Length: 349
Image (tube, rainbow, N blue to C red; front, top):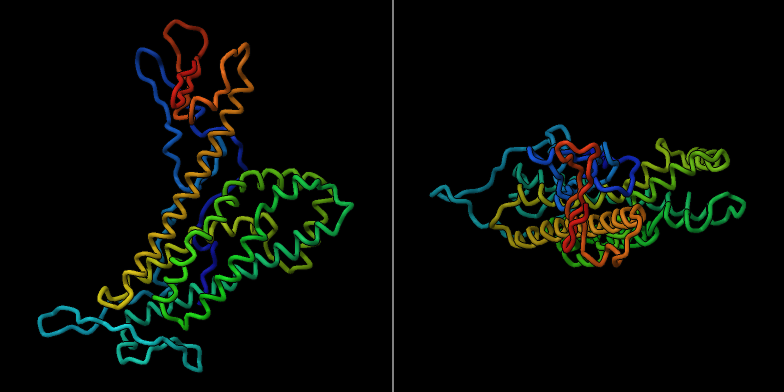
């Protein structure tokens, strides 16, 4: 059983650095609508402004056809209360089917948890292999091709810190495989590496720039030919752009899989609280990535606004804090619309 990251649709596209609320309109004296820049979701695309935002909530839940969801079941005492389920060794039989040494392993609830554990392991192996193909099949090959019309700065923007992510997830995969299919041990891996997951912040923040550079590359015939030849050599069904999106998709998928373990693991099981900690850890990672990306977008937007100002004698706009709101409005009987920018410490009209 294997679910690809594409099974959880998260839409990405070309981006611009402009804030998403730029086209808000209103009428002075009647009503004015402004969109707050602080209410950015988690990575979805704003069609008007092209801003990418991270979406923590999956586009659709796990379906029965994907993981063959079974109804929760478990041993109960005479009063109908679930008995405490001890943490038992998890293992794989010779056919590859996950089992435990306890009789309770045959319950639908535990069988479902087994499938989720296998989903985590299988998709992590595939993901690490994809990262390897990006690093070795594209990045290192480009470094060797000195005649390619791709400057070092654009190459760095195109791939970001993908090499660091590849090394980190290779270690994570090894740790997960050493867990012997124990869901609690799997969860402990995520908790113990909570700080290291923040390397994804740099990648996700850089991702819009990566898309922009790749778009420019595909306008060059030499680079277009090179990328197509690499895709054929690597036998990839998808182009480089789809592979560069995978880290963004993957970091958002971990907490969903951990939720599936939590939802079908008996609350009395030893180590249940560790699973909850793992979910909280990966959700906080996602929110941190979103917050850093939002601040980066606002800083870029402030630079754009600063460059449009004429005869401005005040200090740099960044000294007034973050951009909170921006929008356009019209004063009654006035010929032109006015643009409003609200910063933490400044209202600019």
